[in-house]
Image (tube, rainbow, N blue to C red):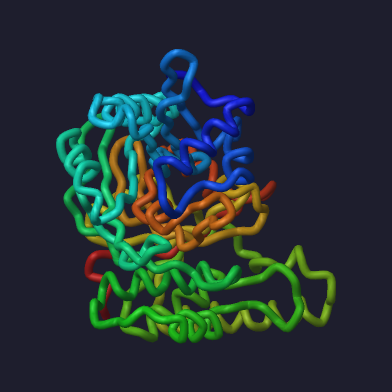
Length: 365
């Protein structure tokens, strides 16, 4: 077995055509994936002929890998090659610092499902109508090393439907965690955005800041707590127009006054690792502002939900799914991030701004 090279492209395409009747990787996709830092294509050779391959996808600065594809040539099926490729994928993921490997498999692929069960994978979900022929997909996961995390349930995952509603998507996940009667919807997502946004017309960078989000959560019966390391307002440096800046400033002043009137606790500092861990241990959640650059090489600030932690990782729901690199929500839900990487993400820009909203385990008012 070895890492794929550009010269393997034609052979890999031919193998795709022989093994899969639908949902095949295109020449363009394979060319882009070979040699990419966030992907590994490992091939198995016999007599200088490629007889199988596996494709693993990684998310930058996280401890999660995704087994996107595994293929074994028809004449070698039943020889144990599939198990060997799976073991090689697990080894590659582990060497890249990952503690979880996840995958999707067709619900009618009994041999593959049996293999995953035998090799220690657990089913943790499914997608209806996932493949192009409308077959469902089962979702499997394996922890590659170390002690299991807590058995705590995860909040329901909600994917943001626009480029600018990460905050409202996180609010939906928080609301559904504390009140299972909440029905996630795009209408609710946009309603929450209207209530918490600082954007004024075409003001450029903007979005939902912690005070507006906390007010919207408190109005719906939760008891949020705000941590913000800077007293000055959010998003204003990216706005050139004085008029637009003034409007955004007034909106944020109003959010802060309303938060004070509603008795929302506010701490003028960054939340500490100990405080975050204590909130999680007490059954709470944290909506945390992170640097998009660390995760996507995008400079914009971004909200995520922290729902679990252990000595080495935090576990988050990221409402953003990077379709450009063939991600699915499985890659963004329950995402393990090493503490050092997380601590880099939460200190934003040259001013090292940090912001978070905690809703503790007794979060309902």
